[in-house]
Length: 82
Image (cartoon, rainbow, N blue to C red; front, side, top):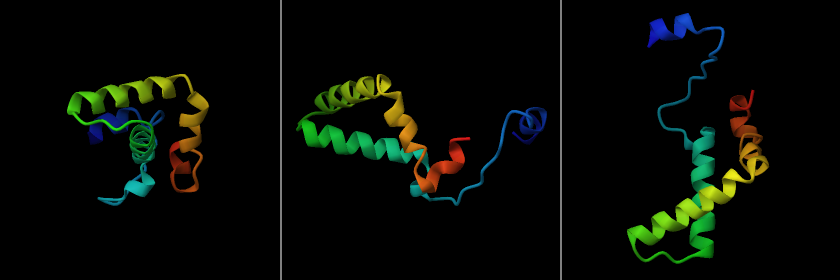
């Protein structure tokens, strides 16, 4: 990994995060968005219903790039937006 990073140093900026710090991880903000909307709008009773509701929500988000981009604008994860 160190060799690969050295070869791509002009394209990669490393941000070292604590071992467990979900509030600094933009993916966790998206996970929270999924959890909130899937449980608020549906009541999945099986794994397949949960998977279907999650796919539906993520497809909706694909058509809302501004919403996803806004997750990276939050103060705690702004480092990842540059």
